[in-house]
Amino acid sequence: MAGVLAFMTLGQQAQKTTEEASAAQQIPDAPRPQVGLPALNTVRPGMGTTPDAANDRPQTDPQAPPSSLPSSAAGQQRPDDGPPPELPASGQGPDAFKLVVRTNFVEVPFTVKDNKQRPVPGILWREVRIYENNLPQHISLYTVDPFPLSVAIVIDQSLTPDNMAKVNNSLAALQGAFAPYDEVAVYTYNNGPQRRTDFTAANSARLEFALNNSKSTGREVYMNMGGPLAQTTTLNGRNFDPNTAPIRNSQAMELKVPKEVHTLNDAILEAAKSMPTRGRDRRRVIYVISDGKEYGSKAKTKEVIRYLQTNKIAVYGTLVGDSALPVVGFLDKIHLPLTMRDNILPVYTSETGGNLDAEFRQRGIEESFQKIFAEVRTQYMIGYYTHQPFIDGKYRSIDVRVLRPNLTVIAKKGYIPLASDSGPTNVISPNR
Image 1 (cartoon, rainbow, N blue to C red):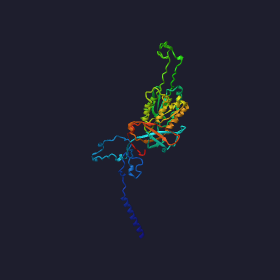
Image 2: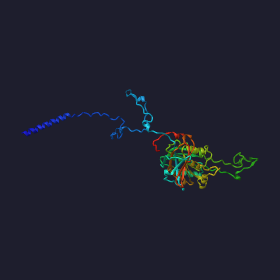
Image 3: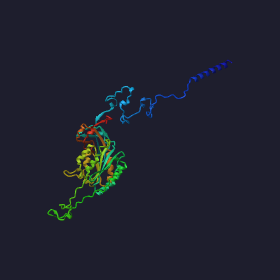
Image 4: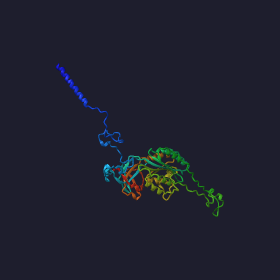
């Protein structure tokens, strides 16, 4: 009996304890409001995944332009905010990590070939020397990375019909020589330059249409009608019968054929005028398909070369016609003194660091497109900081040498600085 009473007493005490615990627990009717939630449009993916509170702030690019115009300081300040905070002085805060220098930096692309005119790869920077005005310069940049191209194609339409037909048939292969990130403009010339299209993507249908629109029949060669059958009779210095004169009412006994007009200088200058607007990170190239003849241009060759050297433009070309023949091309290249040039393209290429490829057949012309632009794309790039002032605008000679025997270095012979090149620029890396 005593055991039963003790067991009942313990059961009553346990039930009383359970009732007291249930009365102490309070179940709310609704969830409590949360305090400290982020404001609208401030939550980003990954926010709150790290214990670092600083990582939860929105990340912004300090160099990116603002998305809205900044408001005035008076509009941002409220009466209860107190005085506005003091701005950091110059050289403090974000400005402490910004370095402003004058960019007297010169970039010189060059090509190295062996005695068989094949490109030579694997040239190290230790094997290269560069001189400006015969003074050695310290190499600050050396790279073999390809650069995107800005190419202005100049097509000669004053060729003979047979040579013009070869060029027309080979233009279909020209577009395949470019990369997708290149941009191309097309110019033609006969008695004057004409722009077919402004710079457009190399793989666009617009460029294909411009190249097809650049096809021409060429120009017939003037025939010099000499000999007895081309003469007429004169009496006292006057034509005896004006109807038989080579030129009506002319006092001459023979027909004097006027010289053909080939405005190559004007065409190169017109194409070069569109180059300064292209970015500095692009390689500026003028590619000429011509026989190199020049006559009748308003611009002089020296003036055009100076413009090219000032704006860092290189001239490359494919020679066609008689200039592509080995003997004729050799005589045009060496240029006999006190004689006129029948082909002026070697002058442009040697002064600007370009190169020529002479091809007489259609298949050779098509292959020259790929060969020329492959050479441009795989050039070496060397850079240095010149100690000469950029604002004087004087010509500076450049000499690039490679410390290996039996090699030919193709580079521009000099440059003319622009005042805009010496403007202040933000330097990102001091080891540039």
